[in-house]
Image (tube, rainbow, N blue to C red):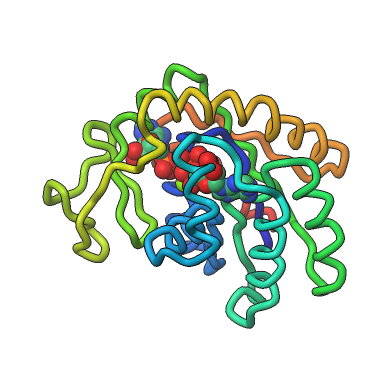
Length: 214
Ligand code: AP5
Ligand code: MG
């Protein structure tokens, strides 16, 4: 089963992705995590991407399309995957539509997670991340031991783009460039709308009910 997770910054894509990956044995491919790893390792891609990410802007399409093309061809994702954070623009979606047939793949469902703006700001400003990709919230979803990841014991950090100015930019960029994808996938008849304003387990129940149909 191949899934796309669509939703604004802070809608819970990463949080739900961890749970979906465990239950349905699909690989979690987060373009944000891939870019952050490149930033940490100071690769040429990371140096280029950091300028855009810190400002809450999108990294240029051409870079992302190449990353995803390479990743989807790897053996470990052939049993099923979940794209988290890609596509984010119409040109990225069109590129994916070209890549998939050449790999004999298709997307089964797009989970569109909807959350009101004021809730997104509350979630992002209190978020703490681990470099393994897991995210926490100081109030809504705290780790068992303060500052440490439950899963790998790594130190939690505050993302540079979770500062207020960057958060507001990211929400605007989402509306301008990513929201049009809802229509794009609606036309393909593969969208499932998920109410992302509920508690984490409740959202996962709704997602599971959708995925169980596949
Ligand atoms: P990316 O890492 O993809 O960030 P994003 O889309 O902005 O989404 P987030 O990771 O911020 O939110 P999330 O939906 O995963 O929420 P989470 O589960 O963590 O991208 C970062 C940047 O990389 C982009 O801005 C761009 O520059 C670049 N980039 C990446 N992909 C790109 C692409 N394709 N093209 C161009 N550029 C690209 O949850 C958020 C918080 O809320 C956490 O604290 C969590 O604990 C809490 N929480 C989760 N669910 C709930 C709930 N139900 N109730 C209460 N709290 C909750
Ligand atoms: Mg995320």
